[in-house]
Image 1 (cartoon, rainbow, N blue to C red):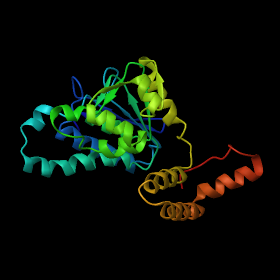
Image 2: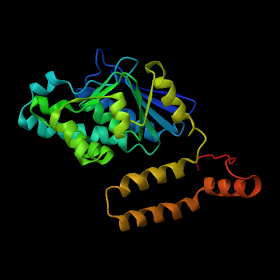
Image 3: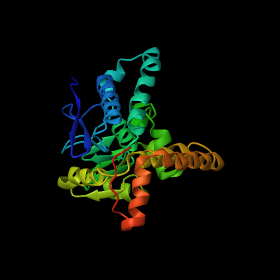
Image 4: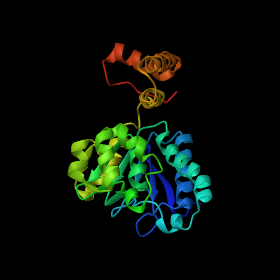
Length: 259
C-alpha cells in the first residue's frame, strides 16, 4: 500500500491525494506512488475523471531538495527518467484530469499541476518554477509544458527569474483556469470532474489524445490523427447511442455506457 499517495474513488471521480507532511515534498518514493496511482486511475472503469489534490493547505511545494542535494550526476541521470515518466503518467491518463491547487505549487508541484487538463486554484495559491535559484532548471516538464501553456516569453520570465506567481496573475496568463475561495477548491474540482461521470468514455479519450498528441506534431499530421480518432469512434456503442438519442429525443439526452 502506498504511503504518501492514495487514490480515492466516489461517484465516478478518482482523487489522487498527495499526503506527505508537511509540504508534500516530491521525493522519489512519492513520484513512484504518483505513477502507480495514475496507472490505476487509467485502468479502472469506474473512474471517469480524475482530481489531483494535495490537501487544504498545500498542493506540493516542490521536489525533496535534501534528497536531491545528496545525489551525484550519475544518480540524477538514472533518476531523471523516472521523475519525468512519473509525471507524464498523470498527463497521459486518458480521462479528464483537473488539478485542485491550494497553497504552494512550486517546482515539481507546479510541474505536476501542468500535467492536468485544467487547473482550479485557490485565491491564495502560489505557483512557480524556482529551480533556477538552486542552480538547476525544471526537470519534470516545466520548460516544455509551461511554455506550451502560457507561451515561451512568459515561461522564460517565470523560469529565468524563479519568481512566484500569485493566483490572480496565474489566471490572467492562463497558468490556471479558474480561481475560487480556498475552501471551495476541491469541491469545484470534483464538480468539474463529476460532469463526466456519465459521458462517452471513448469519445473523451479520443478528444484528449487528439488535442495532446496534435500539439506535438505539424498541423497536417494532427488533422490525420483527428480523422483516424473520429472514424474509430463509429465502432463504439456510445456513438450509436448518442446519435440515436439525438435523432429521437434531441441533443444532450443520451445515456452512455462507456463501450
